[in-house]
Image 1 (cartoon, helix red, strand yellow):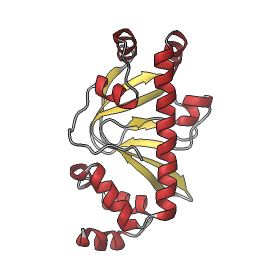
Image 2 (cartoon, helix red, strand yellow; image 1 turned 135 degrees about the vertical axis):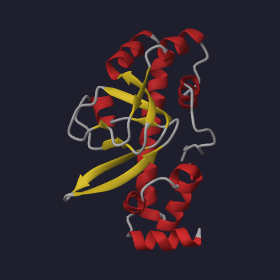
Image 3 (cartoon, rainbow, N blue to C red; image 1 turned 90 degrees about the horizontal axis):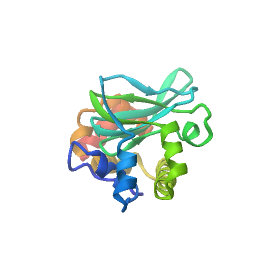
Image 4 (tube, helix red, strand yellow; image 1 turned 30 degrees about the vertical axis):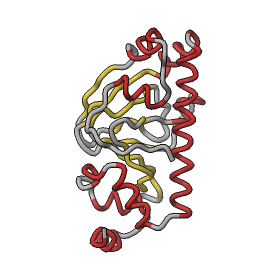
Length: 197
């Protein structure tokens, strides 16, 4: 899977854009960059809510978030997001339908926010940016597939090691209950895994 290790805690918008697909024309890059607005949100802010059509997507500049859904009155963590990651409801982005996931900040975050309407409008004017948007959707689809394959074929210990490789410093700040939910195990089992790591 094409996930990145977080070596730098803060990412600029050009780096975020170009890690999805390189835009060689400065006009395309500038047109896309200008649509982003830098926003700062506090810990425990819900950015994307399940059951609602989301009209924005975000990229994490600094901080971390969790993606989860509700199942029988409990929260099941699907994934965590770190600098450079997209925060997106694919169902809203592609079909303009309510999404399934909720995305919430785990700490104070700086995010690049963009309106999906403005983005889709730019797609009509630039084939390069439209291709960038296709690559974004492909990348997010692959992340979903990777999450599914990880749940089906990796042990909790392997999934924990993979999470540590993605963001070793940040993982130490995430609540153990969230990590246990992500791995599909109890906090006691997670403590054993962490003791061996």
